[in-house]
Amino acid sequence: MRAWVVEDNDQNFELVEYLLSEAGWEVARATSGAELRALTARTGLGAEPAEPDIVLLDMNLPDASGLDLIVALRAHSALATVPVVAVTAHAMRGDRERCLAAGCDAYLSKPIDPATFLGEIAALAGARRR
Ligand code: MN
Image (cartoon, rainbow, N blue to C red):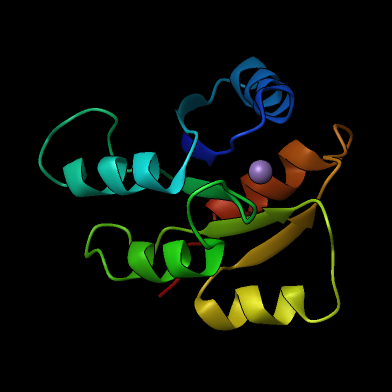
């Protein structure tokens, strides 16, 4: 299984990468909205990294609105049905609803709980949108 992890914070990324790679996942990272857009632009053209089974999207990036990025992912034919998990540090009232309305499949608040993270991600990756 392959995950794209969109995360600007190195510590957060390293924990997620550790958990996923220990479980055999391939991980590709984007540290910004621009890097995610670059990954997205190459997808479906036979380039690496290949299409992901899940996208973990930090909603607080230096250069982009996570909500806009969800919409951009959904507009790409190869990514329209890939599960997208919004990840945010400040759970504010209405955040979850806004993320779901923009097209994400699930919502995780930081800090990531290592005890439950993999199970949640594996379940979501197995349930592609239709
Ligand atoms: Mn961030």
